[in-house]
Amino acid sequence: MPAELACGRSGRRRPLEAARPLEQRAELRGAQWRGSLRLLYKPGAMDSEPEHYGVVGHPVAHSWSPFIHGMFAKQTGQSLSYRLFDVPPHEFRERIVGFFAGGGRGLNVTLPHKMAAAEMADELTPRATRAGAVNTLAARGDERLLGDNTDGAGLVRDLCDNLGVVITRRRILIIGAGGATRGVLSPLLTLEPSQLVIANRTPERAAALAQDFQDLGSVSGVGFSDLTAEPFDLIINATSASLKGEVPNVPAGALGKDTFCYDMAYGKTDTAFIRWARGLGSSRAAQGWGMLVEQAAESFRVWRGIRPSTTPVLAALKERAEGAGT
Ligand code: NAP
Image (cartoon, rainbow, N blue to C red; front, side):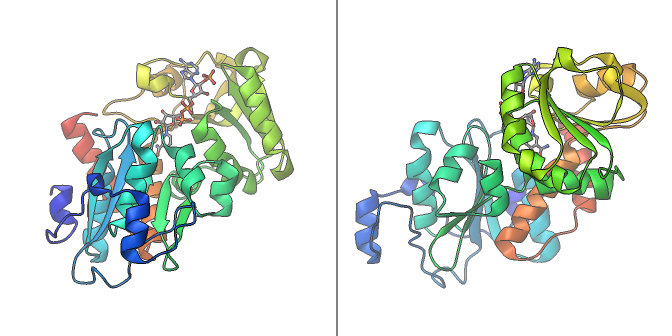
């Protein structure tokens, strides 16, 4: 079922484009404009309509989020709309203010806006503060904008609950030192792996990231050539290399026959990293579809106070993706 239909009955849309100048909005709603983002939503104004959500990115047309949240809404009997918003960086702030001032209740935020969203939020959850990035914006009842980051919780849920991977007292390698790695370090370290190594094409970025998380556990940052031949229990590919069909230059010795290989990227067929892992004899490997659904479920919980069941949605998503291509 198309996401728009699954999200509840059709209601009058308040387009993201309809933003008025900030000062004018503040005056219209009688709110005091103080320079930071104050939400101007009046609770109850849209009680009879579906509440509005969406995902903002650039580009964003490829996003599966409307499909996922449409299924969540149907499953939990929630009345909401969920739309795609392609917003270039220079328009981000104004368009976000416009969306929430127009009554929008929540947004997912994807590349390249996650850091800008963190700067806009009035308040960050501890995990968003740690991540330095926001993938979930939520309008709060006190007219403030909450920024959260559900990526780490989504990854851990998929690894531990869906795939049965053990983190505690295991050696973990994360490849990549970008925003996704920063977002998942805290929840991974909370599970107390014996060692967590970040390896990156640009070693300085890995070292700097590891330094930022020293207080949470045993974490180090290195270049690919610094990795020894001692196999890890879990290798997580958090680079964007798979998006280009490339494989990071990780030595084959990092992978043993029992190593679980996880690619945060996902595709219709095996990603380049998954093919690399299988080619080296790995029998346990997974793409990031589960992380995608689990982080979405966590966003849905932040917005609606109810966590949907992810199993049927993940199954439907894979079936749909395999049919449509990604
Ligand atoms: P990012 O901030 O742009 O970071 C990209 C990282 O990839 C950097 O560490 C970069 O290394 C590395 N890299 C890029 N091309 C490479 C190559 N050819 N070889 C080796 N390293 C390479 O991106 P991000 O936000 O962290 O996202 C990373 C991946 O996670 C993406 O594929 C994204 O789709 C995925 N992701 C998935 C989910 C999900 O729900 N499944 C959620 C979040 C992110 P340098 O530092 O040397 O440039």
